[in-house]
Amino acid sequence: MKQKALIFFLLSLCAFAGNLLNIPLLFGSVHIVLGGIFAFIALELLGFVPAFAVALIASVQLFLLWGHPWGAVVALLEFLFVALLYRKRNFELITADWLFWLLVGIPVYMAGLKYLLGVQEYVLHLPFKGAVNGLLNTSLASLALLLFYMFIKREKRLSFRRLVLVSTLVLSTIPLFAKTLYDTFHEEEIIVKDVKEDIHRISYYAKIQLAYWLRVHLNAVETLANALEALGKDNVQELQRQTEAVHKTFRDFHACYIADENATALTFYPKVNPKGRYMIGVNFNYRPYYREAKKTLKPVFTKVFIAKFALRPVVGIAVPAVKDGKFIGYAYCGLNLEHAKELLGNLSAESGIYLTLVDREGTIIVSSSPEQKTFTQVELSKFKVLKGGLAVHIREGSNRIPLKRWEHAHFFYSDLIREGVSWMLVAESEVSPYRIELLSILG
Image 1 (cartoon, rainbow, N blue to C red):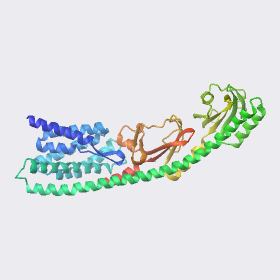
Image 2: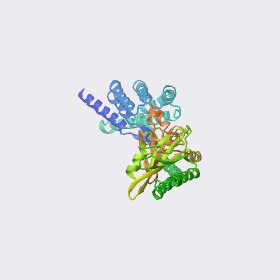
Image 3: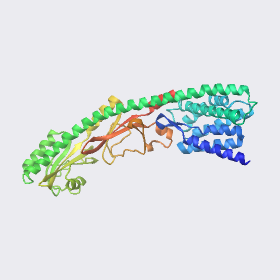
């Protein structure tokens, strides 16, 4: 009894380790798990009840690891079906498992994915991955038992039929699996490399155009700050003329003004807002960009906001005016983001890669993705780095079921627009088409 209890403990531990030390595939979205091997070994060595306990432990662990209830249910059904044929009908483990997946496993797996979990995209592919995994486990369990009887127990009456059948099936299954695994890993590396090159190329074009657009408009605001430094705050008429000239020249500006050291507007264009309020003389010392520009003496890009009267997203640019090392005021212009949104949209339409511009706090400024809305935060709750520096990004809020979350996963890459501007460009490409291709290879 103690010996059986020890064997049960060791097999349970091995089943736990076999699931934990899995083989990740398809960017880590599916895994080849080996815990089932030890439930089938327990079936031969200990009998049905202890073996069912090992299978139950392994199945519960699968659910805890990946939150995939249907995979755990099918694993238990597989064990029960194979155990019935193995113990009652004298089937070999491998042939019984073949029958299970052909008659029960694949249809039940498909139905569970589609009708119970609502997973549509991989219904035709994931069950075949399960079948490959299950057949690998029974093949390795059969091989382990055969070697056990031959070399440890030195069983002299080992069935010749069993010896030939198991050897033939194992020698045909294991090499095939190894080749398929190699092909899948190799194709995965090629995909990551190709996607990375495409994303980097599109990101490079987007960053160049966005950086140029920002630089031009930042230069325009800097000219107003330079004018305040050169002319002083008493030369209001000339400052107003230059403010109007900048606004009229750069059509993406929403409004522009120059303020003194106390944030009181010396100039403003348009002078009167849509409510009829005269803007020259208005004090803006409550604005965060004023306090930051005064403190750092560096240009400031504000958070994205909705302009009161334009009712569209705007980002403010504030440039301090500094004379003899002293803050004497600043220039400010609100920059409309329609051009940036159009630019990202055109590049996305050409490449199929979504582009999103975010500020230093992760707030979305503009995006070409229908899922990414202005003012929301970029979610990086699950961030898995792949080979070559590319990453996979899963939006946690998309669904509680991991398989369905992977339907909305993206290859992900981010980089600064340019030095001195803390905006990031995020590029995303859907993972789903590549996962289906790799699942087809595996299946």
